[in-house]
Length: 83
Image (cartoon, rainbow, N blue to C red):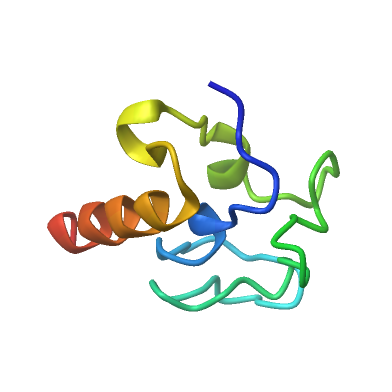
């Protein structure tokens, strides 16, 4: 499955413990990444400064569903289960 352009759920729902440009301490769960633009596109996509956790994430139907709101709900639930 390919990521849906403009989804951004993986840039909002999960916590990220590694440094992100503009967020040197990472980001807490539920906080929008500063690198997510107004169209919900990653400003670091394709750049070497993109965190490894972001590079390693691959969209899957079981996580992302068929709609952006489903992806956000699923990722919030996964984040809560792994705390």
